[in-house]
Length: 462
Image 1 (cartoon, rainbow, N blue to C red):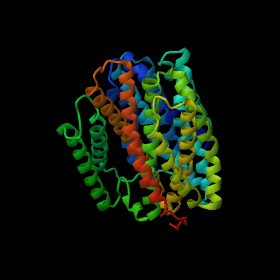
Image 2: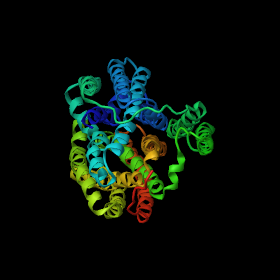
Image 3: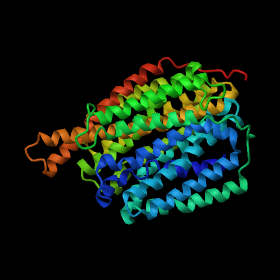
């Protein structure tokens, strides 16, 4: 477990490590914000596209083969990003990093289901919450501290030694927890899932670029292709004897509920982590290190309380955490819709801390509860489903909310008497962020309603 957690921590850390640097990279790489956000969206999209195939891959390769291969690919991508001379090369490196991350996540989750009995999985899942939630939460803070004295390339160079250490550590200590059975590979399913998730996220991403909007044929065209491909993917999986991703796992109600709540949580989490740096630097004029420090208390608390939430889940069940956590999230997102240029830095710290607490109360309990309901032969598919939705929802969240923010700012400046005024640009940023947070507030209300239906599960026999 330690071998897996070391590697996974640094791979997931990269999901948000660049967020604080986005305003700086817009200038240095000479690309607009909606284009630059592909460094984050593309990362999560590739992870999301790969994870459906992970249910197959973990049955084809040993634990050691999967993890060591993933870490080597991730390390290569990190090196490419560090030496990238332009945006296109940097994006290529990010996608290589994402391939490594997409292969690692399912190995970690599946190992927990194999090693720990259901009554102890809450604590185990809470412990890896230090990885899955703490790593991306602390990314912006670490990034701000690094960028205060070093340039953006060091965001990658400083990760390289840890990646190499993880490979060496895993080579020595990592043991296999399952034997390959090598099921049939369905290429059509892989193609459909790739086109489906890719089209959906790409369409949402370009909705905020330039003069793009939801009525643009390019936008709704890609979204439509994505949705149709996903429907065909679902239809095919239900008909295959050996599906790439066995969607019959959704017949277990708590997994279905966990999947929906997971989508909302990840969209809220990653969109907020992306929007706040733009608010801090673009509207409030704060430095990158100050922006990172404002998000440090919440990031630290998120990591510290994840194991506690896991233990509370084992003792009291999911409802005692998820229902009050979802209610808390609604209140917090409403306050985020009220922020302005006059909002104090302490207010932002308090709101971010509360957001991290609410997400910790919801994320791990719903995920563990949903997986606990599955019989053992569904473990690879259940973990693949939730990991896929987690990453793709994060990618869609970043793309959609940054697009919404950019569109709101653009509309404000088009109606402004002096669109080049720094004050007007700042106010336009606030308007754009408000628009994005209002949508997030709506999602939080849906999450609270769904949380009322959650109940504790009992693992059936295989």
